[in-house]
Structures are given as structure tokens and as C-alpha cells.
Length: 398
View 1 (cartoon, rainbow, N blue to C red):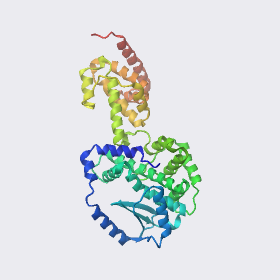
View 2 (cartoon, helix red, strand yellow; view 1 turned 90 degrees about the horizontal axis):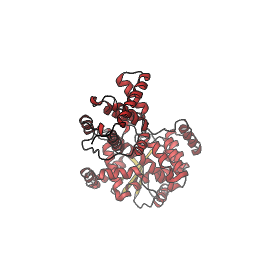
View 3 (tube, one colour; view 1 turned 135 degrees about the horizontal axis):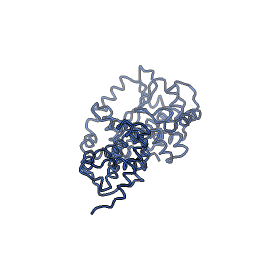
View 4 (cartoon, helix red, strand yellow; view 1 turned 180 degrees about the horizontal axis):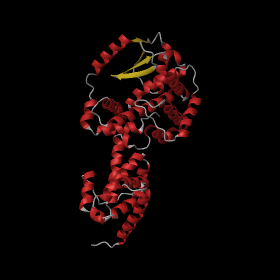
């Protein structure tokens, strides 16, 4: 069964909570006018394929519609005055219009053309999921991606939504063709102009890339690179939904401070809050200065419950090095904010950094901020850890 990816569902649910934005995009106003203007523009700038004269092409459309359980009217066109090979689809008012450009029709085999048509129709298939909510989310992220005032997190969310859409559509093509090979060979042919491509050879090429760097991920803006898409559809062919974690890693990678989408932004905020809550668990750490600092990070932070350090560690392990540096500086912030506690908080933060596998970035933060050598940082760590353990042995005063 062809289902939307988790990212599509999460994005739709997120924007549904932004009720004013959601309601604005749910509106169907002006679709009739849009359709009329769009059709007129297409007729001016394309050749429209006729269902009778070009029956072979439309047979592929009908086969793809049948396999994808779709019944919408579909019209095919060839763009004028362009050498770039491509295929695109526009869906307006329950009508789909697929536009081919360049020599794509003459270059691709029958199975490859079927894969391309099925891929484009899968864009529309995606829109029908969640009672049409994915289509609304798609229009929202498209608007976000084109708006100069959007935040980096909004841009990244729009980018990932588009990338996952291509992964979904490749799966739609797989369901229609029953084979990963024409999907991969059509991708490579379109991008290279080659008349003959061996899909399995290209998969081996993709695997070679990942054998050198297992953490390779896409840098694509709207489409993943061909080697990513080829590996993704091949993995889905081999493993089904068990391939999802690997595909997610190829699309999103580890959490990176420079590439936070809306969801990872929330995740890092949660990790930061849990780290601060852990830092302030000892009563002796809950001074006016440290509490005020915690409120600067999160105004409504509550220190009544202790976060699970195992869960926190699992989150910390799955982040990019620049986020480890950030978390190390959160530790250093609290280690130095209350001078009356002297070096005890620093020892405590060395202790937590060891537990959370942040020891190296924390040591680097201490080295940089205090302008120390590696040897002196090691000595300081030993001294302050001793002070911290001495503090732990002191009885609590009621």
C-alpha cells in the first residue's frame, strides 16, 4: 500500500495547529479561474497529446491510474522551446496536467515512460491522503519556501517535505511498474542523456558512495540526488518499511544546528530543557543565579521532575558535532554563572559531560573560554571533580 511518509503526516498535523494559516490555505477560492488561465497558457506554449492519436501514451496513463486507484482526468503535453528533459504535473480543480519537456519521450523506453507517468501521478495520489490534508500542507510549504521572510527552520521544513515527496512518488512508480530498474534508469537517462543505463550498476555505484561515508545525506533543495533516490527505492524494494530508518538518515542526516527544521528545532529545545533540568536537580545548584539563567532559556521551566538520563543520552548521541558543541556551552553557562559556588558546578558539569558523552566538546569549551592547554584542562577536571564529589558527600540541611 502506498502511504505518505511520516514527515508528510507530521507536517500536516503541525500546520493544522496553526489554525489561521491552515484555514487560509484550505480555501478553494479562485480555483476555477486558476484552471481556465492555466489551460489557456498551456495551449499557447505546448503541444497537447490527443487521446486517440496518441493512444499509446494514454494507455500508460490509464494503467498507472488503475494501479494507483485513481480516476481523475489526465491530459499530457509536450513543452515548446526547451532542451532540458523533465516531466512535471499540475493538479487544479480535480484535473491533472502532465507536461514533458526536451526529448524525454523519444529517449525513454516503454517501461521508463510508465515509471515517469506513474511518478508524476503519485504527486496527486499523495494529495488525497489524510482527507486532502497533505495537499494543503504541500501548498503551505510551497508558499513558505518561496517567501523571503520565512525562518531557516521553515525553509528546512519545506525542503524536507519536498524531498520526501519525491521518495513517495518513486514508490508510486514502483507500485505501477513492479520494478525498481525503470525508475532508476529513467532518472539517470534524463540527467545524463545516455541512451542505455544499467540500473543495477548504478545501485552498486551508490553503495560505493555509502561504503566510503555511511553518513552521506542529500543536499538537494527540491529533489534528492539521483544516487540517493536510486538507493532509496532499491532499499524499499529489498526491505519494505524496514528501510525507513536508513532512508530517513539519507534525507535528514544527524541533527545539525545549521539545518534545523521545525520538528528538530522543537526536539533540540526539549533536549536543552531536559539538560537544564538535570543540571539543577541538586538543591545546592538551585541558587538565585542559576534559576534565573534557567528562566532565560525557558520562562516556564519546572524543576520538580528529573529527566531520564538514558533517554537524554540517546538524543545527544544522534546529533551533529556542532550541536554537541552547543550543549557543551549550555553546561559551561551553568558551570560559571554563580561565582559563590566556586568550582563545584564546573566539576559537576565535567561529571555530566562524561555521562552524556559530551566530554570532548565540554573540555574544548573549557579550554577555549579559560585559555588553557589540554594538560591544564585535564588537571582542572581532576580538581573540580574532587570538589564536586566532596560536595556530594555533605549532608543535606533541612
